[in-house]
Image 1: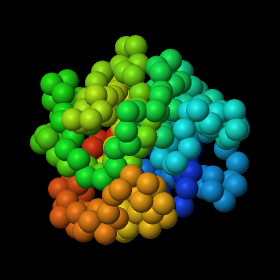
Image 2 (image 1 turned 180 degrees about the horizontal axis):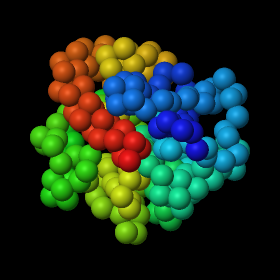
Image 3 (image 1 turned 60 degrees about the vertical axis):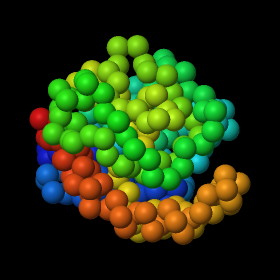
Image 4 (image 1 turned 30 degrees about the vertical axis):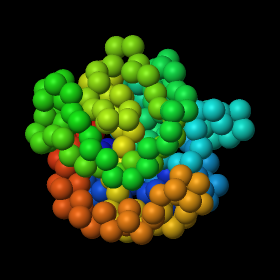
Length: 236
């Protein structure tokens, strides 16, 4: 463990960086190191950090046999859970966290991509991260797989299409299927890099990018609150 608060970030693809998560860690005095898996950085064998962030990507739990780094990531998640270190899983990261907790992860009936309303549950009003967030709010989504709620976890959010969008397990492990961390720049990056997927789904990347400018202010305020509180869990 480092003498000052330190978080390890696992980034799977270039267009999906930690974004406003990194901003919140910086603002709260938490140092962070990003393992860039798209550059073939190795996943550490053990978690030597005070907290773990696992970002999104186009791969999934169904790719565990073909992508050894995903199994190595699961090992880190399981270590963090055993040692009760804060975990934050975003999109793919939330699916890996749910899988590590024994919940099923499977393809949803259809992909959920774009800007959609997130509805907070009653439990969110008492949650350490979400209790000061006004809901519902609009967030960015880009996923095909969904997860069941892990046994013992608390559901925090849903959308009209997807029942389980966010959960807490224990005191400090969180899975967010939606992308609260994005900025207009990263939305532009994702819609450009994954244009083929948008075409397959009949979605307009330009319209998604324009919507990012509309939702930016509220999304950033929400992110500052949620990720700032997660950073404080790391500091504790």
